[in-house]
Image (cartoon, rainbow, N blue to C red; front, top):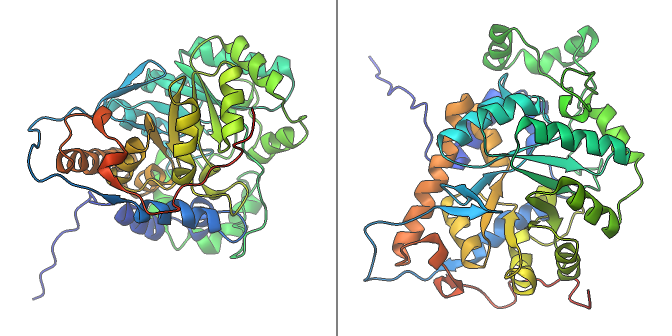
Length: 399
């Protein structure tokens, strides 16, 4: 008789979470998670750049206890890893609620997308340290109503995303995303979905179908929620913002304010002039303009320009705790993760997201230990081997 070891529901790497997510999800859903724009050059560079950076470990002087906590925009977090806002999380019936609960259980700040499938009121109740992400979409009056709603729900800060020039073209084919789930859609996607009965069963058991509406794009709780493409259409028809518009948003919000999507030094300086509390060095996970350099390559120049004035956060390509340590050593206050926790969510729900956060903690703690540091705040470029020509400086002219 052949004996098989029972499969551990937990996973030790984000790569394993991704493998399990791929086996669990219908291919159209999985493809939507991994896809970068056009050739995928930026998403590849986001990952490759971290591998180019080496550690410079110390042999003696290690600290038995290490402090991994920090603050971002004045908000305490047990780990310098924030949950990045990502849209419609149809990989699991509980979606953003499962992610919020997981982040709360690990003392981590939750970022909630305007395009989320769960209302901001429910998510903020699940995790009191929630940041609400807003696009420049619709009229000023509509945006004020959305901010007022988020404020009333108790969110602690605002994330404003402006770096979204979404590309429809992908060299390996764009995954089809339905506008809504109805009988016609079910028939169309049935051949893909029936091959993943466990995913289908989770939704059937919950009494829900994958939700493709965006309740937070409505001005009030309980109001009509547009579909994803309805919300996308509103964004496409909205006049692009100016720096004066960014300043207006910051003043209208009046609290902690993170501007997401900065890659250029001149933009970073203008963001500071507009009064932001923090900014994120980001290329939208490779879903923006393809061939934009990896976020980690652009980080040092932005930190040098404005790092003593605002909190600088990095997102893009984080897959392990060592990546977090490298970003912090180059000056980031914290990082944000997206695909990594979505794979955990797909693989094992709330426990899977907790698993991914624990992977980040373990890898970061190991790096801080090996580098002879007592705190994440002690990490510096001296802890890294940075190859010549690694960094990229964009927009270094006058602000």
